[in-house]
Length: 175
Image (cartoon, rainbow, N blue to C red; front, side):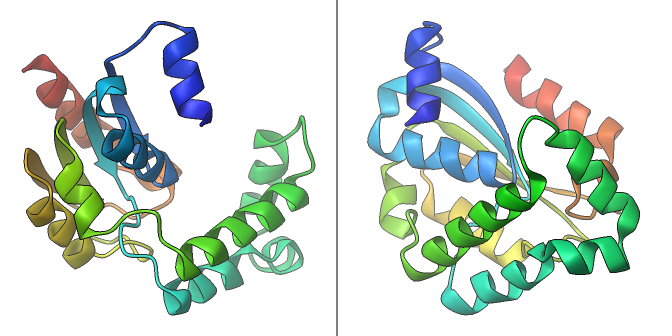
């Protein structure tokens, strides 16, 4: 709803979207039910196969106390990134959203088949949150889709091979 409102409010339709992680999921969902809003989507690291097991596995990484203990630099970065709100609350709401998606995914092969805009699905070859196979499955289910893998690329945005991803973005949107 927020993305739909933003596109409408700023008169951006049909929008060209780069969706990293959950941003790709949101864009694909909007494209599946309001195709007039989206021109094209390039994703990277978007979980496209939510299950209860996968959601629970991901949520265990969202414990703020464990983050402070195990990865204090990352916890500090989250605190700074979400300075206008409580970063712990952001983690809790993210965990709840993931668990809900695990129980009731918003996208499936039927939704992917309904997407009429051009989509380029991407995944990092070292992404521990998103598999190459789930990305390939969505690619195969989407009519006007393309697929790419970024070498030596993990899931965290700070570890994305920026130059390679920028090349993908430029190439995709120059066509």
